[in-house]
Length: 607
Image 1 (cartoon, one colour):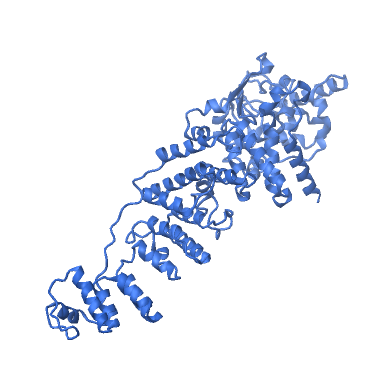
Image 2 (tube, rainbow, N blue to C red):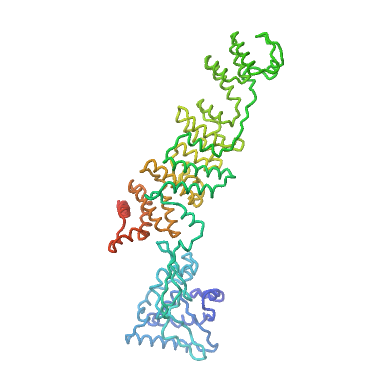
């Protein structure tokens, strides 16, 4: 510190006195220096009392300012007399703190508080609080509460006969902690040594946090969904409320999120089963209608240039039939000419005429009875008349054994809505199941690459893509409607966990024993959030569900999850409503699932 060059004596800065009630006292480093010199000739164990031991531990005493002309020799003579008096009291058998700690003089000197603050990495107040919580009860004695100081009235300075340990906190303060049963525990700042009763307040976190968005979101969800008294109408009602409140239909992402909630409603209504036509109807409900224009006739496919084709349309003599075609031909005239060309055995010309005038039914049937190359040529001519983003184009490309171009380009503004293309793929599956699966997964990958996470997950669900884990970034899905490539706090939102649990519930409606093993860790996370917001009963029910799933498998395959579930359940086990119905002597019994899960964890640790 400034002004003090002796490194063996470190004093708090001036601001230390501003934070605590030491402002009225002045430091006397010179007196402490002489004190050290005088003590060097004394026997350490003889002159060290309870006050000195705490002094060397870093508790600096409060000193009052003495008169400038005071003789230091007289001061320490009086201190020496007080030490002798204390020794006599010890021999007389009085119980003093000096006698209790007389043997501690031979202990090595501990570092000062400032050094401990620096080594621990905590602030001074944080370190004191941690020390108070750890061992404050062992070091505190109400009989020693008081002030230690030096008199300053012109008389010789005499130390107090009863040395006192400086308090870690200058004034009584409030202690706060969280209880396992969703309670906030407050210990009020009363002083029991002065006759004040210790006062403890218990507050329910559910009441304290009432009105917050997070608590309302937790209370609105009818979970856990494995309850026997749960009806699927409650789940469907919750999904419809989410559609009405949290989906902005003016944005593409809001419409995609709404589509996922509607899919969950459909699955819940049909007990977890659905077919492609059901999903296609769902996709087309909110689909924006779009007109797909036809392309101009491709002259190069028929072997005629545009000028040659125009010359045939201007009323010139037809050398084949000998007729002069009219400028504008009706549908009947077009068919009649197609028939006349076949009279003369001009199949190729008849095909060209039919393709030029959009008689695709006549052209496809005629070419199908000819060689395969001609049929493929007519088929390509037909598909070339469709625009690229036409769902018919997607279907024909799939039926031709190719991955549709829409699966590689959807999600772009020029392509329009992706839903009609997926509806065509789901409602018209070809014989090659692997081709259908690859086309739908490719469409999902394309949408995910363009940021449409909800739309991509809808495609993955249609392709029965399995769920993965957060740490494996190559997995396509972890939580329904949430990307695991973002931060965990944004990824594991309460809405994503609730949506995922509803999907698991829909699967269980079809297969009662089914569950999603990668999802169990997020159930534990959700249970801990319920406990934090003062809902311990629901949190304990989630722990029971997770334990049931783990016990049906091998808990050793997920040891960390099993241990964490056991730890949380042990804290919440007394919140079980079943305890109220048990006799008093049986209320300390634990549920069977908790005992079995703990035994599995202990067996795994031993192994």
